[in-house]
Amino acid sequence: MQSVTRWNLVRIAVTTVYLWVGWVLFTWSVAPRTLALGLIHSSVVALLTYPVFVEHDEAARRSHVPRLQFLAVYLLLLVFQMYVASFRVLWQIVRGRINPGVVHFRTRLRSDIARVVLTNSITLTPGTITLLLDDDHLIVHWLDARTTHSRYAWTLVAQPFERLLKRIWV
Amino acid sequence: MTIAAIVFLGLGVVFGVIGNLGVLILPDVYTRLQASSTASTTSVFSALVAAMLTVGWHPMTGKIAVIALFFFVTSPIAAHIIARYAWQREIVPWRRSFAERRQLREHHDD
Image 1: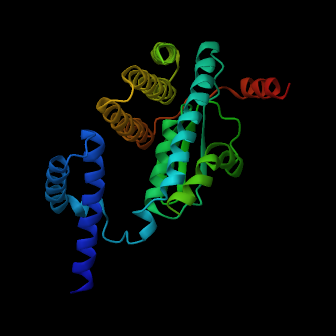
Image 2: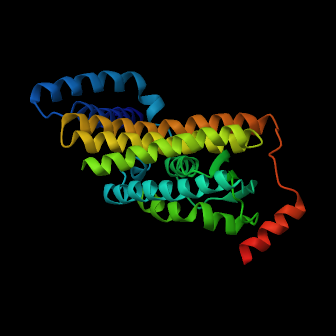
């Protein structure tokens, strides 16, 4: 078997597993019939869409198999940060005391998926929106820009997420 | 359980109202996007948590969890696309004047 063929099979398998987990969560039943039906449909969809789901050069094992224990902690942290930042933004809107600004900084994360998740988390947290992600360079619009210094902005905006993200996906 | 659901639903209402208020009173596209998209994400998430608490342990819980996860992925992407479009059209973000910023900084230092 050629290595390209093997890699394509791995890509199909990874896509199938992800789709199947989604199916099981969404149907919320472990009856064998449901599981089999889900597996069949996941594999058909995976056959059609695996080039989109897993990039050709995205071959690191860690970018497909996240460390789930850290992922759970990360989701809790995300929800907590979201609520804290929401109350801060709410107060700023009510008082009208906003000081918007644009900050640039670089992330230390290596893999694509980790960078995308970091960008997504920054945008999800109220008060910050990512304007552009170019390789490791992020441009962030900040509702209460306490600094324009690149390193310090990274410490305030991205560091709490990055510390966990580099454990999940490297 | 019911009280927790009521609290979360109340939070959702408050964040939704303030988010839409922000769209009306804030000055430019970026700050309005901050108010509308991100505050309403919190609002919708609170409503979903309230629904989960009301239902209890039920097939619907997993579906709501999946919906919440899906919302966590899609909502920031929508906000990011709008912000990215505005940034690439070179719309200049609104800023406070220098004097006002200095005053705010002194206020922070107090």
